Amino acid sequence: MNFTLTQKERMLLEDQKTHEQICIEKYSKYACEAQDPQLKQILKENEQAERTHLATINQLLNGTIPQMNQQQGQQNQGMQQVQGANIQQNQASPQGKLSDKDICTDLLMTEKYVSGTYDVAIFEFANPQVRDVLNHIQKEEQQHGEKIFNYMQSKGLYNVQ
Image 1 (cartoon, rainbow, N blue to C red):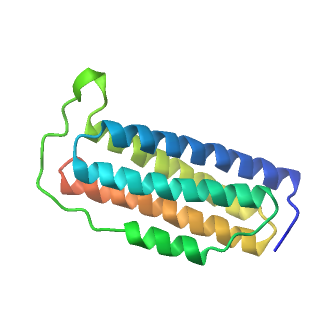
Image 2 (image 1 turned 180 degrees about the vertical axis):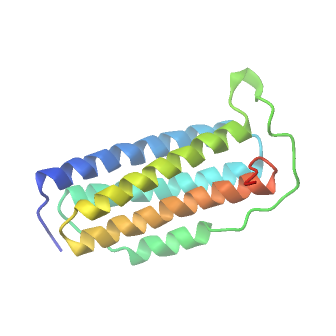
């Protein structure tokens, strides 16, 4: 189904496109820097999901509403409960790279921000189908944050008390 964007809707989608590109860059970079293989896997999964989000935003910018059922299946494959023993992840990595804790903290903060920007965008779109697509992406952004949060908690890197 094709639709026409208002100037404001186009601007909001361009902002979301930039956010998705930054998320892809961060997840890609941090997957290479992370020490823990479990964290590397989470980051690679989230990076792939962000690439799907970027493709979806590009479709919306082209005036096409994408099919969301295919994307949901891909995302559900990556949702796993994170568990494991507490290992040394607070110390900085060699060559001045960030520690796993710092990587997670940055990505959790990023996901909180990006989810919030989707919330604003959802309210600004007139087309209910576009709002549904953006709502779907926002939910996945929240799931990315949840995976990072669960990982941090399981490793003793995030105390909620």
